[in-house]
Amino acid sequence: MITTRPQPTTRKPDTAIYERRESAVRSYARSMPRQFNKAEGAWMHDNQGGRYLDFLSGCSTLNYGHNHPVLKQALLDYIAADGITHGLDLHTDAKAAFLETLETVILRPRGLNYRAMFTGPTGTNAVEAAIKLARKVTGRELVIAFTNGFHGMTLGALACTGNAAKRGGAGVPLSHVAHEPYDGYHGPDVDTADLLERRLSDPSSGLDAPAAILVETVQGEGGLNSASPEWLRRIAAIARHHGALMIVDDIQAGCGRTGGFFSFEGMGFTPDVVTMAKSLSGMGLPFALALFRPELDQWSPGEHNGTFRGNNHAFVTATAALRHFWGSAMFQADIARRGTLLERLLETMAAEHGLSTRGRGMMRGIDLKSGEIATAVTAGCFERGLIIETSGAHDEIVKVLAPLVIDDALLSAGLDILEICIREALAVHYGVAAE
Ligand SMILES: Cc1ncc(COP(=O)(O)O)c(C=O)c1O
Image (cartoon, rainbow, N blue to C red):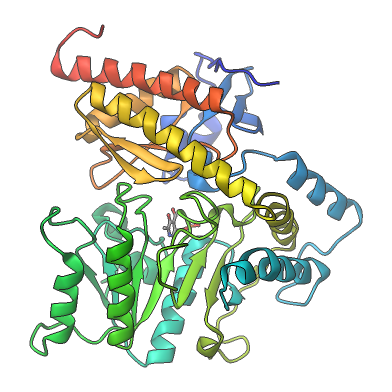
């Protein structure tokens, strides 16, 4: 049954156990102080009967919604048959099925020849593996990352992340990374690819020859800045020209979020390495991958290991997701259509308030120009039963990450709530009455 009305609860649950026993590092739980116990599709439920529309989707981890019935059934069947849950990196039926499906459904139709490396199960593990491999293969140390880039919290990936508050948690110098300006960072008139090329070609620029250029095609945490295909093609050419590997971090923008399975599809370049995680398992199970050209596979056995390389339950749900959603062109066409609908609705909303939009596909948001206002908007949304978060250097962008499979009526219903909250927050901030 499709219902279009969230029904949030107003009474905050008892949080004493969390305050007593859970680390202060928790964050989402603070802005959404409820105790959740159930979820399906685009809906999350709390333990007091409240119902919330989820436009956060586990930060793009639940692109197919919560507990999709096809994925859930595949996992239930596998568990019921005592399938392998944990097998280090042993060969298993589940792993073989995943690799075969990845090959036939994703790689071959796209003309891609990648090997898959199962890293530890979170995105940051895939980024660590990618930059280690680039350093190993090239014999160089420097990684070029970009302003507003976000790549994870372990030290190597954190060094590639721009956000000062996150970097501050490292406790040691974060080194061997140069942060160059992303596309549009200096405004529309400055070609930042040109700047990078000039710096790399100038023997006196102080920029060492890089092992890798690491880039998000749309910066998920950094404010939904979207690089143009031309800029990305230039970056790919610059990497090739200077003997560096181009790594596309598709952890947030991949798995259909920006339209294609990979966010760079149809752009006229092929990254040397791609990192994936988040929606790869399709059900929120931890699972990460680094994909790279076979010639780059210069690891010795176990050189980069980890107990949870290859989560067999995630292999099962990922295989089911690839077969169910990506086996025909219809799914991609549907995301494109819904992405255009989202674009239109957000553009209308932004124009109404003199604001602008960001992003691509089903990864879009509105720039509120102030973290304070954007945070007031997301707080107001939560009170009305819409789960939505901010992104950007100052948390100024309200980011819509609805499930890719969301019903159009639900998408519009959620955006109606967003519009009311933007109107109210702007009215409070600028001291004018909301109409
Ligand atoms: C682009 C990108 N890379 C890497 C990561 C890190 O992934 P994880 O949180 O699973 O370590 C994230 C997480 O948001 C991300 O958006």
